[in-house]
Length: 290
Image (cartoon, rainbow, N blue to C red; front, side, top):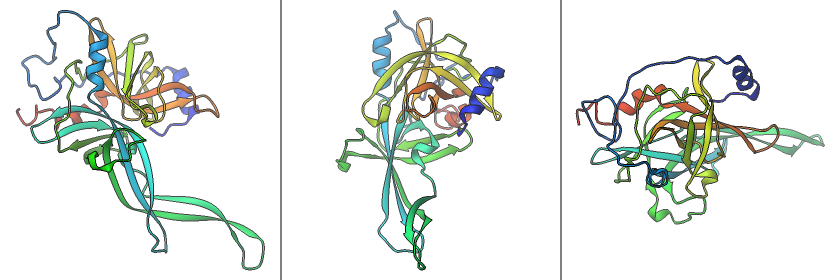
């Protein structure tokens, strides 16, 4: 999902649309006769539904150690934060979906500096650092310095092209039943949409907006363009659309499109769930017959 502003803007103007129908699957370890998990409900309560969904949203901290090439210095630790959403529990592990870039930082980085020349003067050099360690865990937020209660994460599947990763924790975490998963659902312009996540890793939050351009295709990748407030740290956040009295899990946030030269969000860009439903099927119980 590393798209430039010009590519996205050009695609928006072109209005390229595509629709796939991969089929449906019920969420949260349930195997039903119906392809849709239609929950019996007496009334719609958006507040209670979102509060329940937020219980399944977690802050992810990834700490990566980098060492300057050609040295034996102690690793410099680089920390990154994002969001993960618990969607299934199999009796031993809770499975969560997030972005690849949330749980996997670059293998190497270059840091530019100024060093003196032997003949006098100064030169700009690029010091290369290699990743030597990496650990992802669930934490309370960026201010959480107590590592004793961190929950370790293991990556079990990832698709770099989609920037989608499935991770698991050896602990039972809350899995919400306050939404419906329909892998063939296609958002439409004007759909009411909610994003739930950890903006800047500070706290859990739900924001409300609308679908601006559904299922746009950029470099063969299907994306949803959403007019909703989100920011760095919302990477990996699930987004939901409202249809009547139900909330449908529609995809995962992967990037924010900002105003030029600012950090203010112009649009939120999401990967629709129909693009990675096969990854989810491995951990929802249907394939294993649970």
